[in-house]
Amino acid sequence: MTALHFTNARLIDPEALTDEPGSLTVQNGTILGRGGKAPKGATVIDCGGKCLAPGIVDWGVKIGEPGERHRESFRSAGLAAAAGGVTTIIARPDTLPAIDTPEVLEFVTRRAAEASPVRIRHMAALTKGRQGREMTEIGFLLDAGAIAFTDAFHVSTDTKGLSRALTYARSLGALVVGHPQEPGLSAGAAATAGKFASFRGIPHVSPVAERMGLERDLALVEMTGARYHADQITTARSLPALRRAKEAGLDVTAGTSIHHLTLNEFDVGDYRTFFKMTPPLRSEDDRQAIIAALAEGLIDVIASFHTPADEESKRLPFEEADPGAVALETILPAAMRLCHGGHIGLPQLFRALALNPANRLGLPQGRLSDGAPADLVLFDPDAPFLMDRFKLRSKSKNTPFDGARMEGKVLATWVGGAEVFRSGA
Image (cartoon, rainbow, N blue to C red; front, top):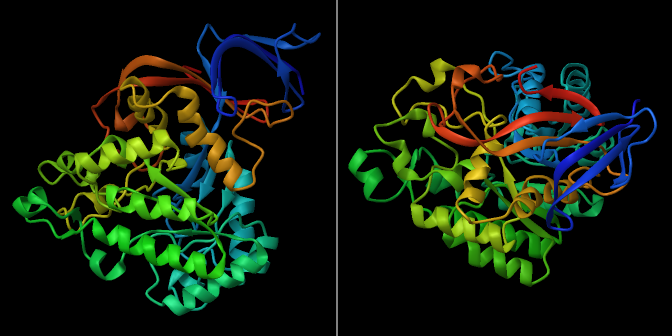
């Protein structure tokens, strides 16, 4: 493979937390080093003073294969990811059927490798059929390549069964990903409890339901010693429990969604179903609290929670419409709102988008250090554009940012030193 030499770059290093001009050399798909002259025969890429950062490791992406390929395929998700600066997708197991056996996992792994221009790793279901009762064959799934275990948005009510699964996962060193919600309170809810939801007549759930679900999970983690990641922390009420768990030395990390960082409950407006999420969008006070927790490092990961839904699933009354939004192409410009708002710097942002998820999942990506995979994104953090959902590469077009003015444009993306996207190409 030809060597690459990136010059005139603004290097965003989430490990060193630096943002400085420099050059970067790539050889045989890995980062060779910074500074110095281009190796003989290398392809020189002038970055024009724009930002060069590790590619995003997007944890919690829904892909429609198997079972819902009309919503999103490995090919369309991979193209959307490349255009959004996402070089590694961590896919959810909430497919049809669920990824709960080595055979299904091997099938999707093979399909992803064949069809996608970016890397795709899969989480497997923690319980069979994601039903929260009988645990899956965690050891065999690990051998088949499962990177973590989760029942995604299906929260188990069988606490004893969940404790057994966590104990077994602990014995194998497997990472368990939980969705912190109290399922009884959350059932049927389409909005967060408050004056807005009451005025609109939307079925709602108290934000306390998230804290209750998180505290149960953390108590089980304390009891079993399991490795645990909370997929979405979205309310201020959950933060004290998360802080206590970390201070107590539990092996716990937490993420949040880009939509909960950049939108609030009022964005639903006149029942706009593209703003219906799981969990529902929260109050502005909650949004600000989560941004502060991210800036502090209490929350470790930002993810898109890309959830494609076809028009028929969204063009329904608000409480009946499917939740979720596509976000592989919008995660970076949406996240730039945090930087432009002065809440967080670019190195800290890429720590949450790339380095932290890679570290938690045991992946070598997410960094600019020597020997790391050359998974890179070149972007202009200030370039303005008008979001047009029909230009998205995802099969589904359900983005809440349709028509929004955004800043931050991906110019090119490389995976293992191979160019997989170039703007305008």
